[in-house]
Image (tube, rainbow, N blue to C red; front, side):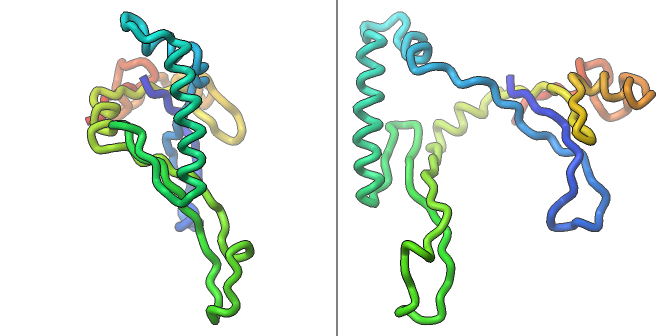
Length: 168
C-alpha cells in the first residue's frame, strides 16, 4: 500500500495562481539487506549470506562499470546509468568538464516488465495532510480542525480518509 500526504503548494510555473492540493509520497523505512535476503531466499536452497555476498560483489562491479562510462543491466529489473547537466560555453576552447558538467547522478531505469509488475495492483492510501507547516494525521483530522465535516463530496464518501484507490 503506497501512502501519500496532501500538501498545499504553489505551481512554480504559475506562481500567480492560488495554491492547490497535491499528493506527495510518504516513504517507509527501507529494509536492511539482511532482512531482504532472508525474505528473498525463503523456501530456496540459496543461503541469505550467499545472496548478500552476491549483491555486494555485483555492487562493486557496477561501480567499476559506471565509472568506465558503461550502463549496468540489473537482470530483468532494469538499468543503471549516468546522467548530468552541462553549462554552455561560447567556444569549444572555453569548455572545461570539471567546471561545466554539473549535477552528476546515477539513474535507475526499470525495465518495462519490472515496471508493469510493480505497478500492477498498486493501491494508495491517504496518510495525512500538511497545511501551513502543521501536519495532520488524516484528512478527517484536518477537516475537523478546519471546522468541517469528515466526509466531503468527491472524496470517496465512506472510505477511510476519503482517499484509497488502486492504480490502473
